[in-house]
Image (tube, rainbow, N blue to C red; front, side, top):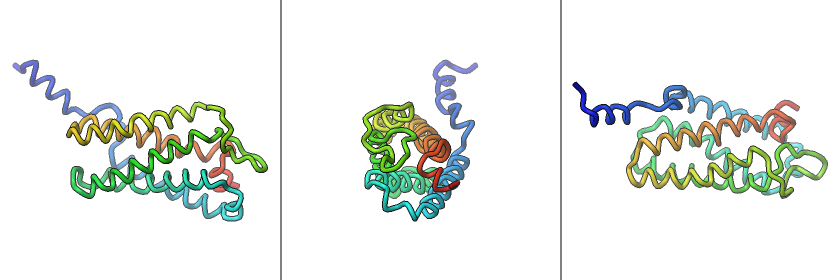
Length: 182
């Protein structure tokens, strides 16, 4: 007969819903697809580069770094010196992308507009706040060697703030979507 402590320990080792639905391999492939789509969109939009404000370039660069590093972080061995170093780069790029996105207006496109510094808030801004709160938590969880919570937080960041937000940059006449499909 299992004791309550053994049952609790087994439950703690059991992967969460997100881990069961989206393995690291699936998330890595989705990140690679997103990174390729972003690079293709940027290349296709070369004629418009001069009209893009620096803030958007900083945001795109930070997101591209995070998107390219995500598969590396998800698939390589955890807990190594390189994992920690790349983790700080990944986390920093996520924080930069989240902070810069707070100054965007969702879907704002038009002559001379490009959605920068409009002051309004849209639902996508909630993801930016989510990243600004969760990223430091993920670092603290890793420093405390709380592997389970760290993995859950990272998985939520990858799914919500990287992949969902990333794929939503393509529809609805947004910048990358207009470059990729225009």
